[in-house]
Length: 122
Figure 1 (cartoon, rainbow, N blue to C red):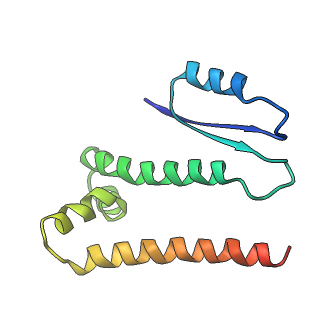
Figure 2: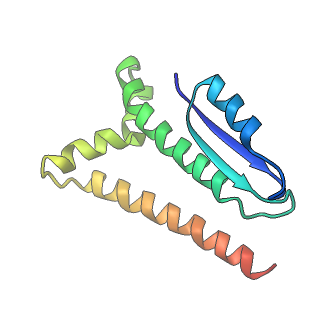
Figure 3: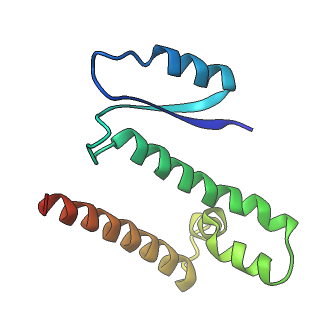
């Protein structure tokens, strides 16, 4: 199983090489990097790693769907991205698929708005 890595140093004087080598030796498929102080809230590398992980989780749910049954299968089916994409790629517009992507987009926009509002008050 491929891992996602995150390497960070506090100042530009520090070097990421040791962390990158260690993450590569562990077998990380994707490594995100940041150079930021601990007090700084903006960490684009961490945000990218978490977003990538969340998207990967939604794709993995489609594979788990085949292993589950009953109520768990219905729940995984509703959360999976691939299940919703299959009908859309066939040209079928179903209200549940469209509402899934609209809700997903609105959730991401809400998160972006909260980040922008928090920056405004600093």
